[in-house]
Structures are given as structure tokens and as C-alpha cells.
Amino acid sequence: MKTHRALLIALALAAPGLTAFAQGTATSPAKRQAALELAAKLLAPRPDLAASLPAGLVNPFDPAASRKVSVIVSGALSDREILERIAARITPSGAMMFGDHWILLLGEKKLKVGETLTINFEGADYVVVITDINRTSFKIRLNREEVTRPIKSGKAP
Image 1 (cartoon, rainbow, N blue to C red):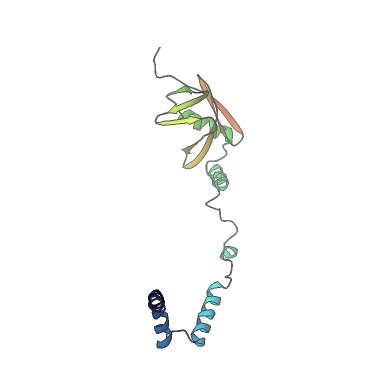
Image 2 (image 1 turned 60 degrees about the horizontal axis):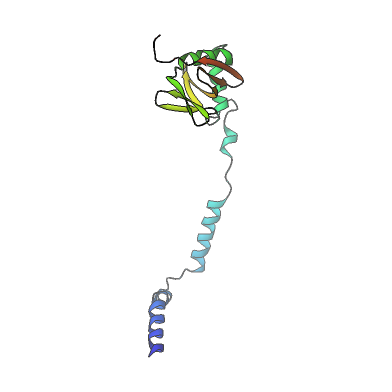
């Protein structure tokens, strides 16, 4: 009885494959060859399109290249001058001690030492790094230049 059930289950599982083979839906050698030729065509190496581009193009995914362009566009300003002008725009609302490190409060943002801040200046984005925070001042860096700015409290004397 058990062998009859096993035989019926095996036939039920094998029936779709056997009927497909009996109806001739198995691929012929000509169809297989056509499929292999199509696969070879699709997998063939293609020519390098980047080689045909002009040499003077700027890579839009390279942040260093965009900074170079912005310095050229903004005139003869040095990194120091740009940083001083950017620093004048940064007005923190205060600083607080959290655990054993300081946090700079810029509106809703809470920044720690080492975090970056992106500032748009004259149409170009500059990324400045916060290098030091204490109770009365903070330092920011752009490339190799660094500026110290005071933290002015919201209380009037």
C-alpha cells in the first residue's frame, strides 16, 4: 500500500516534465546555439566610452575638483580669506558639555569635534571641520587653514 502511494506521488511530480518532453518543448540544438550566440554577444566587452570624453572635464563626484573650480570662480581668494568669511556666517547659539566632550549648538544641529558643516559661499559649497570647542569659542578648519571664533551667548549684558 505504501509503495503504491510513493509511486503515485513520484508520477505526479514527474508528469509535467514528461509531458513537456513528449510534446517536444525541449529545446533543439539550433535554439540552444542561438541562445549561446546571443549570450556571447551580450557579454562581449564594450569600448570604453570615457576615453572619448574631452580631457578638460571635471569629475562631478570628486569633491576636491569642485573646490578647485569654486576657488577659480570666486577670484583670487585664499583658503584663509574664504574661511574667515565663512566663519563670520556661523553663529552658534551656545555650547554645552555632554559627558566629557563639548557640543556646539547651531540652531537644531548639535555638532561635536571632528564633525563637518557644509556652507554655501558665493555659489560654492565648502565643507568645514570643527576642530575644537570650549565654553567661549570654537575652531573650524578649511583645508589647512584654521580660524577661532567666539561663542556669543544670547544674553545681553
